[in-house]
Every structure is written in structure tokens, then in C-alpha cells.
Length: 324
Image (cartoon, rainbow, N blue to C red; front, side):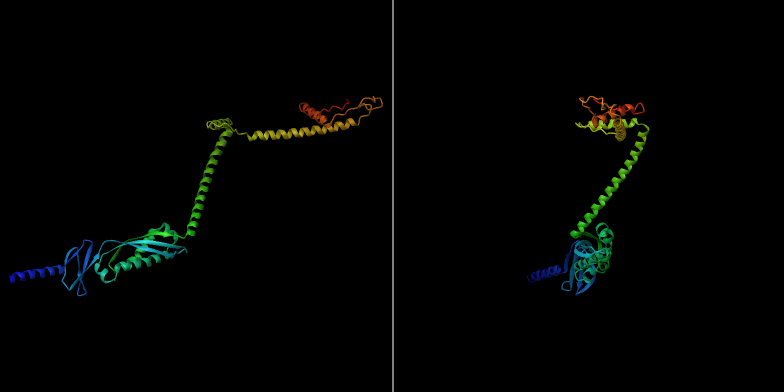
């Protein structure tokens, strides 16, 4: 009976010893053993790790890739623009011993270094680079983080800028600039199209000048295109040359009418100089008969008619005034 109790007690002691001397390390972890406060060289891999009870202490280190967001940092770019930039860092532990021994809290240390490096890279960059050319900035930020991280047993996989926040005034200014640039390009495209169209129209005008019938055919085609839309009103172009012809004809007719009126006035003056015997106002005239005189308008009309008749004969004839 005493032997059985001693055997049971021994088994219990062995079980307690085994429980105190065995630790489990996950696949995503590595174990660092401290014996009496001094780190051992070997790193325990995943699985069961045997340590000495009381003397050894095991610390587990995660070797997975860590995604650490960098809080938004406000700074002034090289071209004096205030911006707020946030980023993200991807890193992992490649040397668990250094990550435990050389730095107190490697996660907090990486966060602080990332924030200061981000503020530094903002001051060295311009706004256009932060908005459109981020790849060199990401590489520069990664190089700035690699320097302290390698000494802590940490490898930087990648660093990327997430967002760039601009002031509202800067957003409005950039919007106006973009609108002005789009308007400039639209005007250039429109002017280029007009230039090409004018060149084609010039060639078409030369062809139509050689064959005048082409202009009439083009007019008829335009009429067909307008009439195809079922419009109740049809607008036809009026040739400018016809307007010029009518204008020149009007000026020539006005000049002829003015010359006829002047000739009629001269003829009336000559008739007034004739004696009383010739114009019926002499002593032999009948005092009971009233002498009538043509009005000025009638005289002008007669003169205009005479001028029109004289166009074919080459000279102007004026009838003497007569009494009614």
C-alpha cells in the first residue's frame, strides 16, 4: 500500500513537472527563452517547446505581417500648402530576439517612427507629387522606416499613402484651375475644327467657282434637307450679288431722276422769259379766261417721263409750258 501511494505521488510530481516544462508555440509564433533573465540563442519553433521549470521563461513573438495604420499627420508641403496625410505600413518580425531585446515595444516604436517619417516626407514633397505621383514618395517613406526597423529585427514590406486631405479653399482653387484648363482645351479643339473646315470650304468654293451650276445643285440639296424635316416654313438664301445689283440700279435711277428734274427746272425758267403774246398773257388775251399753271409735281413727273424716253435716243427733250 505504501508503495502504491509513493508511485502515485511520483506520477503526480512528474505530471506537474512536465506541465511546467512544456510550452506550446503556435504556427504563427516563435518562442524566445530567457534562462535566469538571459536570452538563449536558439529560437523555439512552432509546436511543443521544452523549458526548465522555474529557471526558464518563454516569450512568444508573432511573425505574421502586421498592418499598422499611421494616424493623419498635418504638415506644410514644399510649395507652402497645408495638407493632412495618412498612410499604412506593412511589416513583420524576422528576428524575434532583436524584437524582444533591442526595443521595449516594437509595435509602438514602429508607430512613432512612421508618424515622424510621414511628417518629414510631407515637408520634402510638393502637392502635385502627393496627389498624382505617390510611388516615389512611398519608396522614400519606406527607406526612412527601414533604417531603424532593421536594427529591431523588423522587415518593412511596403508603405502606402492612403489619403491626402486639402483645405476647402484649395479644393475650390483647383476646381477653377481644372475648369479653366478644360475650357482652354475645348476652345483649342473648336478652333482647330474651324480651321480645317475653312480649308475644306475654301477648296469647295474654288470648285464651285469653276462650275457655277454646282452652287445651284448645292442650294437644291439644302432645300431638300430642310424640307425633309416637315417644316412649314422654308428659308431660301438670297444671293448677295443680286442685292448689290439692285443697289447699283437704284442709285443710277436716282441720279437720272435728279438730272431730269434739273432739266425741267431750266425749261420752266426759259418759258417764263417768253413774252406775254407767246404765253397768252398779252394784251390780246381774253381777260375773262383764267390762266392755269401746271403744279410742280406734275412738272417733275413730266420731266421724269421725258428722261426715260430720252434714254433710248441719247438726248433730252423738254416740252414748253402751255396754258390750259
